[in-house]
Amino acid sequence: MVPKHELSDFGNHENSEVERWDLMQRLQVDFCLDLEWPFYYQSPAWHAAQSVLDIGCGNGYYLGKLAERFPDKQFTGYDISDEFIQIARKEQGSEKISFGVGDAHAVEGKYDFILARLVFQHLPDPEHVLTSIAESLNPGGHLLIVDSRDVWRYYYPECPRFMEFFDAFIKSQLDRSLNRDFVRTLAGNVGDYPTWNLGGAWEVVIPSTTPGNLERFRRIYGEVIQFVEESETVDLDFKALHEEWDAWCKNPDAYTHAGLSIVLLQKK
Ligand SMILES: C[S@@+](CC[C@H](N)C(=O)[O-])C[C@H]1O[C@@H](n2cnc3c(N)ncnc32)[C@H](O)[C@@H]1O
Image (cartoon, rainbow, N blue to C red; front, side, top):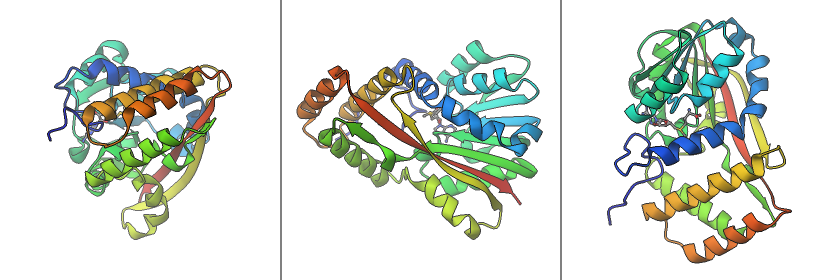
């Protein structure tokens, strides 16, 4: 069976999925960003950085928000998807931000600070990307990685079918060598790397009670269910999952939260 498309094939938009992924990226920025600001504001390395690269910048929506708040820096965004880079250039391009098509496995240029947000979980060879990023950092430069932290996922009222679905999705990703836990484990293993020092590691919980977030969660997870179902990579009773999910979405008392792993590395 050949899957129509897979959740991680961001670079291959053969099925005109760009608009859906574009929306997903905006929702994923809007529902987390307020809880990510502290990691920028409290970071001396961030304040000192003059040149910033966002690797896997997607539509540039996130980088645009950073550039608004920190106009003293020069920003560059790279993504493997030409379609996203076109959107990024059109909407966010300015004297302060430039965009280009580029692969995280072969980063070009030199920067003080590199970001990789929700990208490592989509990379089959994250070790290679770490090496490539290190070569593009100026001495003492920093890498900030933000990725999903799946174990924090929680639903009230409980959604056992959704949890089963998500576990099956994580496993299907692992079967494709996409390890959604890589970033969290990296924090504990930094001592094994000759290139990196650990600048800090945090886990952040994003609640649905933040204004606007409940609706964002509903839309994001609705899309995730749809994508995975269409990809035919997970064998589940999707009818029952949709029933459970629709009931949860209609419940005015529904609550959920998700998690992020945030890791700051410094190049030795
Ligand atoms: C979930 S999106 C995150 C986008 C953006 N960083 C954000 O936080 O809004 C993942 C992005 O990684 C990009 N990507 C995947 N593999 C890549 C690679 N090997 N090199 C560069 N970008 C890649 C995808 O095209 C996609 O835009």
